[in-house]
Length: 556
Image (cartoon, rainbow, N blue to C red):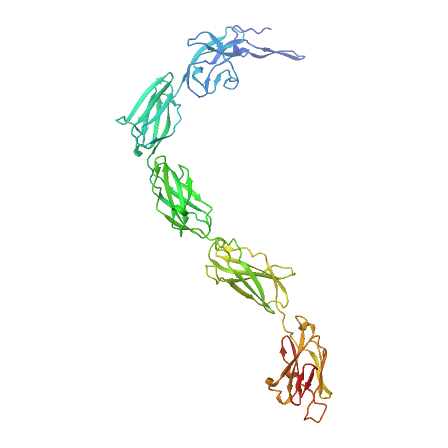
């Protein structure tokens, strides 16, 4: 059996199976038929246009069997002849999978005739020529910017553009075309692919300052650049001067200018009178409209004014503004700090206020810091208001009480104002409190006559917990019995600790009118009283007496 195709076509390609069968079995065989087909267009190339800088795809696609190979060529001249292969670099020029030609960032050099050929060695190859036209939209090649001129002079601005013809250039101000007059002229010229226009303004004034637009147009697009004219005239003082964001050491100054000019900021302390002598100057760039004035003194009133200047001179000063910087914590400590014992349980601290320049604001008070020496722990702080006037001629004084007797203390002082605390005085001063009197009398006091008109007195020192220091001596207060309730008739007899009469004292008594050599001795504890620097021991004798300091004898 034979399968016969009278008119073979492309669609006859495929697999064909022949099957034979009888009672015993069935067999088959499959054969594949591939019909070779010459190239046929799927997408036929056609002429197209593109703008400079755009991406362009020249379509070209074909089918057949085997699959046709597509190649591109470009005419080397302005005519559709002398075709040369297109160089495919894979970056700017490449070929799509279906055979189309892709041109990235097209340029005028890409314009011309392109030939697309499809062939597969079956029949005749396909070939078609398409024309590519690349249009150049209007483009201004001159960069805009700022142009400065002096009043009365001539200002000239030049603008150049490229693009397909017809190409027109116009000058505009405030979105309106500029009309030439006796002061303003516009000239236009061409040089190859570039067209140039020149705007000239004579005898310029401040009214001519501002933005000017150069615009280029053609059928494929438009482009524009802005030129700004600045006219230099004798400067006018800055206006709308404001002072804001004031801190303890800086302030922000802002202002407005009628025309471009550099600015000089002049400032001084408000209490000073001469700008020439005391004024300090800060220069600011031509286009600035604000400046942070730094390096100021805390809590200081300042006067400030501004002046504009350019090549033609300096303006009059602006209105003077006065502002005061904020307070800051004192940066210096009190001076000449001195400490002395005020008593057994107190210290007297004296000092002068810090120097005026480091106070950084009115002083509200002081803090006295102290702690007992050789004890661990934080300083204790005692605050008190300031009392000395601002002239710094007085002395501050404070007595710290409630301290331990006979103790060493570490003392420092610092000032404070509304903004905070200043540093502690340095060096810190160590001072001892005074000794306190014994808090209880001698114990075991007794007395008796010793014969020969003498009296012997015994006692023991006070307990150690009653003493803040070593006992330096004792005082014996003797009062006649008849005057027990009248201490004005008492006589006091001091004895140091190293007296030969310690720990007891024997007083000899003689009397011309007594008949006894053993005078009576009465110890009255109720009459004992504290008498610094020691305790007083009191006893009574039956009559008048006197003490001989040389012999330590008490005589009636």
